[in-house]
Image (spheres, rainbow, N blue to C red):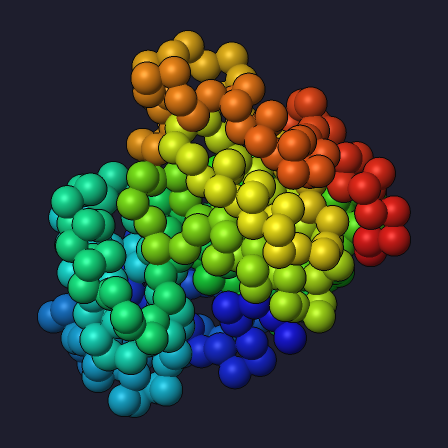
Amino acid sequence: MSIFVDADTRVLVQGMGRTGQLHTSLSLEFGTPVVGGVTPGKGGGQACGLPIFDSVRDAVRETGANASVVFVPPPGAGDAILEAAEAGIGLIVAITEHVPVRDMVRVRHAMRGSASRLIGPNCPGVLDPSLKVRIGIAPYPIFKPGTVGVVSRSGTLTYEAVGQLSALDIGQSTCIGIGGDPVNGTSFIDCLENFEKDDATRAVVMIGEIGGSAEEEAAEFVRSEMTKPVVAFIAGATAPPGKRMGHAGAIVSGGRGTAAEKREALEKAGIPVAASPALMAETLREACPEAR
C-alpha cells in the first residue's frame, strides 16, 4: 500500500512543452507508467514516444489515465486542473508556480466534494520509490525504497531530507511536496492522516516554513490522532517579519506564523524539531531507530 498512488497508477502529462517533455522523459526513465500527454491543437501527434491528445477526456478514454501532472503555464493552470477533475482524473499534481490566487480559489470551490485529489500548485509532486511512480519533478536518483514518509511545503528541502535519509541508509515510503502557496489542494493533515493508515510507513518527516497556521494545525493532529513517530523542521527562522521568503505562503504577518511559534506548537505536541536543515535525518533516526 502507498498513499495517493498504487500499482495501477497511469499518468497523463498536461502541457507537453519543453519542461513537460523533459520530466516525462525522466519519469519514463525511472519506470513510471506515463501513458500520454495533452496539448490542445497537437492531438494525433507524439512526444517522448507517447500519444498526444487535444483534451484530458480524450486521453482518459484512450489510455485509462487516472493521474495527471500539470505543466501548463500560470494563466491556464487553473482551467487545466478543472479539466482533469471533470474528466475523472483521481490524482492531479500541479507543478506550475505563480498560479493566480483568484484562480486557485475558483479551483478549490469547484473541486469541493470532488472525487479528485489535487496536490499543489507550486510543488515538486509525489514520488514513491518502491512503486517507481514519479509524478512531478523530484530528482529520482536520490530516493531509496523504505519506510519513512516525507511531506513538505518546500521542494528543495524535500530533496534535502530525502538525500540525508538515503545517505543514512533510511529509505522512504512516499514523498510529497504539497507546495507553499496559500491556497493549495492537499494539506499536511491530509498527508499525515494517510501516512498513519499506511502499512508501508513507520515514521514521518514533516517540513514546514513560516507563514500561515498549517504547521500548528498539523501538530495538534499528530498529538491527538497519530501513533507513528513524526519529526519536523521549520524553515525561515531568520526571516524578518513582513518579508516574503520564497513561497507566496511564507510570510509572517501581524506577528503570527513565526518559526518560533511553529516550533513551540510542534514541541508541545511531542514532535522533535531539527535545529538545522542539516539535521533532519539525524533527528528522525534518533526518534525512530528502527526506520529503514
